[in-house]
Image (cartoon, rainbow, N blue to C red; front, side):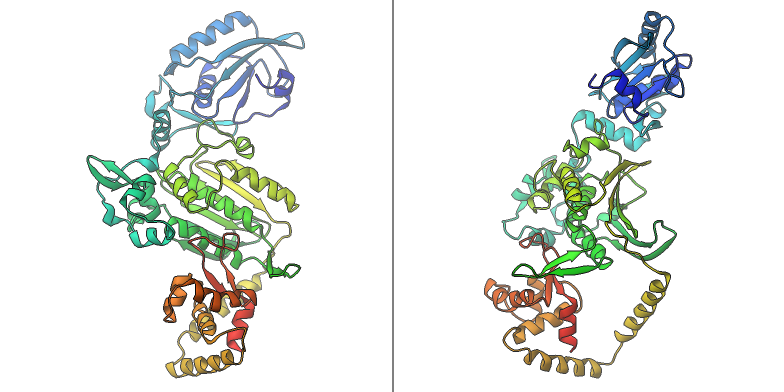
Length: 502
């Protein structure tokens, strides 16, 4: 055992530790051993009272034989824990150590496979449902849910245009999609994998009803009052940018001009949050039904939750050390190809390092009933007041009215804007001003921008007309940390909006 007995006795009961007074009620002990074997392993110490005081075990050798017989009679498949006797304060304790099993799922014979499978959640044992049992079986067989085929579909059921846009720097054909496991061979035919369909399926919500993201900004530190919310149904790679846009929308931004170029300073830890969001999308259990990935923005913290418990063998504290198991290797591979993931297992340790560098409280990783929640704490609370919510509603009403202005007023405003653009001098070209006008309706990628003003999406046009807008602070990237990302978009800054409305 890695920890000494005195050290273990100081710890509270947890996902991998439980205390028992005696073996007078053996069934709870059998449940615990099953749960440990199906989860991350664990240790049971017999001979402690409810307050952690050492009371010892009567007839230790007899109890070792008894518990060995109980395990053999009660648990299937056969489980062989490590059983030891040790002495503390002159009294004998019985120690049982269970390791994560390769023959999962284990279950109580008296309850059968359907009702007798248990997993460990915190310091309690939880009965596994059919979905979780299936995942345990797939894990033992070395098969992931997202790699399974969907034989009812073909290549034509994928959003090929979106795939080509995401992989714009490589030739994306059936062979490439097969190497990424977006497509898999099934009975001599190429069909989408679960992961491929989750990423790029044309009608994925019909078959994966919970494969979407729910984002909310709440007032205060609980969910009593919601200020703003959105539902994101975009393909998964694009969803990352949309989630980050929502978070930035409700954050405050400053500027650092100490370098040659302007650098945005956000009131929320952008890099940490992006890593947490990507981790949630990659490690969500999409076989789970009932809840989507959720992002909750409170005054003092941001919580990101994904369906599914940690994979067997993992504890929350292991993630901090860089221990990594991939639940969805197909989705993870695509995210890595798109530069969302830099190195396997580096993401979670990186967010703890960055939190320390920024002077933030350590992020918190918790397993809930059927979910994993990562909480990122803010350095300074971003307090919303009730009147802000009313103002927001009024502004939304005003915006709706403004969208219904007559064609004559729109034409007049356009002409005035063009005159302002011409007066901007050499910094902003006429084409640059047209790009600014296009961004007024929302963030767009390069291809969309240049197509909308009748220009080729060429580097020379980008250099002449879009780079000057970035350099003078009228436009910003939606993914500044990934300037060459295929998901990169461009949007107006507050200065850019003022410029074209002046």
